[in-house]
Length: 150
Image 1: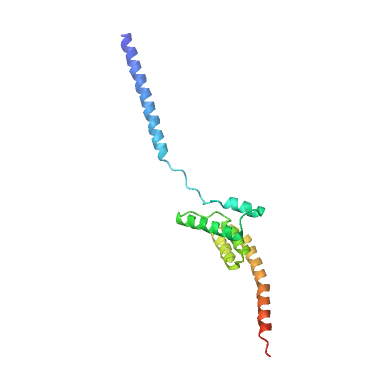
Image 2: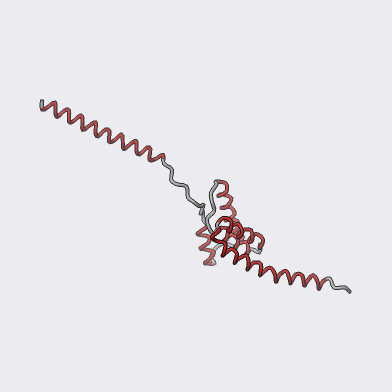
């Protein structure tokens, strides 16, 4: 009878081991089906570009514009969100490339996407307007001098 009890115990242990292996395998399969959470923002190469820009070792403003615009397009195509500061940085690149209207649009877009950036974006926009006013006066003076009656 002792041999029967030993055989019964052996069968029970094997069933328990088999159940454990099957449970572990099922958890592994189900765990593989779980997707990683989608990142909140599409950072891309933006942090590196910004760092290089601040070190003045980065690409030209036009090259940065092209890379950032490509990143923005990629984010739009995948329904991703641009990270905070990308539009502001893009605006600075536009301004450095001599495109103040594009800079203004980028800064206004940053304000809409991240309302907490409004004070800084308003400061940049005021500085842009202050810089544009003297240029407009100079252009008007030049036009007036060129059109004096003879």
